[in-house]
Image 1 (cartoon, rainbow, N blue to C red):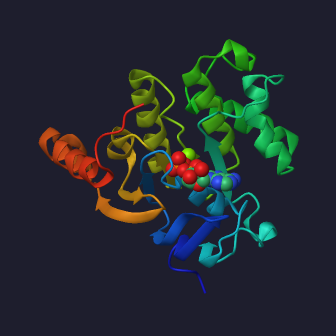
Image 2: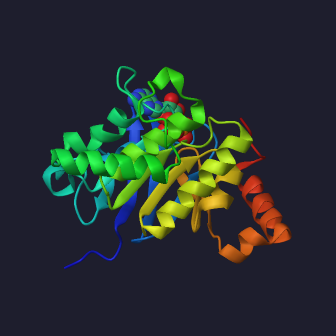
Image 3: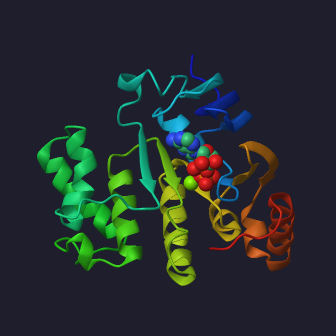
Length: 251
Ligand SMILES: Nc1ncnc2c1ncn2[C@@H]1O[C@H](COP(=O)(O)OP(=O)(O)O)[C@@H](O)[C@H]1O
Ligand SMILES: [Mg+2]
């Protein structure tokens, strides 16, 4: 049977030694949704991402991706999830193109497909002409674009982004957010992204989980296209979120 939610955390608890980092957290994400995990630094957002990726396990509760346990069912989930992080994790000795190709090569996709997909994705993220540039020749925004292209080129069902937009200046970040959400919606990707910036969430997400430390949901909000287009509605949502996290943390 197809699981109802693509992604589901049920009563998840995680400790590092004595330190409670995730506190009885439950959340669900459906196919095609773009969901933000928003909270201050230290709220446990990245830990939740690690649980979803299966790089760590929880102490209690359950984590399911497409009905599978990401910390165990590696074969079933191979190629289904792609990740992109704040620090772009590009390989400096590879060009933009070679970095985009990497994810596909790891999944042993055919060489000609890899080449064609890389070309397609470099264009989609607006990096035409930057193919042969090495990482140090790219701006921060361009690096994030390479990282997003690398994640999306494997055609994953689920995309996980951890602070992919929030390290950039506001103008660069805003354009990247717009481009990313356009692509994600067009391709109907399911996306969970972590951010500490309210504007990131308001610009992109269909739904926001506001997390308070240790990671637990202190507010859940739906955001519609109408909310995004109406400045006063947007401001009201902004204020509501800012209050929930105890002030607007900017960085
Ligand atoms: N590998 C780890 N070992 C011990 N403590 C950790 C580890 N990773 C995160 N933590 C702690 O868990 C808490 C949440 O961290 P994190 O998930 O990175 O939060 P966020 O991404 O919201 O900033 C912090 O107090 C952090 O120090
Ligand atoms: Mg983090």
